[in-house]
Image 1 (tube, helix red, strand yellow):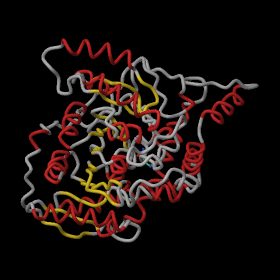
Image 2: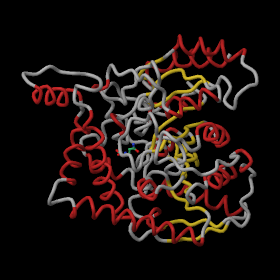
Image 3: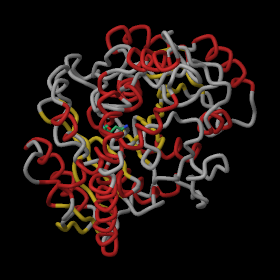
Image 4: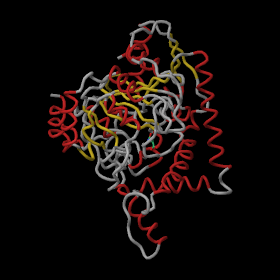
Length: 445
Ligand code: GLN
């Protein structure tokens, strides 16, 4: 059966891949037995799932990849977990990730590295690299990830699976451990587009417990998978097909665009004039929000405490020991950007840039149905290749970050190989038009 096959596969492969931080075998077996008898069957009946470890799971340790939350066991489930339960999915375990979602390679996990199933010397991408690798290695039928600046889409691209970041507000963030609250979104990682539509159907919708969740009707995503793209207007930003994008990646994307044209789509070049400011703006805004969100980890309210001589010393020791180097870097960047005297020059400026980028997309969507380009400028890089150079690492998110700043829905779908490694095609839609994104991805796939 499905669960035993999954557990067997994990047993065979996860020693090497390291996709899981924790398995809940006992719980999964118990649920499998119950689900077997349950009628009627739910949308995701008994499908084994890997859940990113920043998603709160009641009674199951949830660390967000950080030592500081090493012993944190939520007493309530994230809304997406309640929804998965309604759909009768079966969580097998919690997947590895960059600490608090900060990273593009999973090398920032506070626990162990994840290896790319395509080539064990390479990274799976990040920060949802555990979920992406688990799906790619056939360990689970689907994974949940979270995406702040690309953390679902980029690992999907690197691991040759499908990853969907919904519109900001489409899926409840209640129970998701916050990184940058104005950007974080939960979404599916799956083997194909149809599965992504099923999982999104199960987790989408308004949630009174999340004030940023949108009260927008959830359509039937499966009925969008018509295979029809005739007359579809596709915009290809020239900045995303130029310098800095690997030749092999560009070639695969161009072939994908040709294929869409042969299916009747109209493909035209456009411009995202403020693209070059997206990464700098993101690396002010996301750390600023993170520095505020991470203030709560002080050894008093959550997780690990390192005793000190007095209260302040206890705070210092707890945070110095509990957080890894990238998290500390972001807290310093963020508190600096928010400090009085610098706020206008950095944080406010970055917010203005964010608006300009959103407007760039709005202008394009006046005339086009989707925006298409590569998901990442390269294929999966080698473990250790970028880890000592944060700026180079940050630039790997150049294709996904602008979309996050604009809050738009986007999918990464595999579009062939370059030197034996998977390439991802990113398809971006209008706000709350996940149906269109899924339709185009499905027609292409
Ligand atoms: N790689 C980006 C970062 O480090 C995006 C991470 C994410 O989407 N969670 O912030």
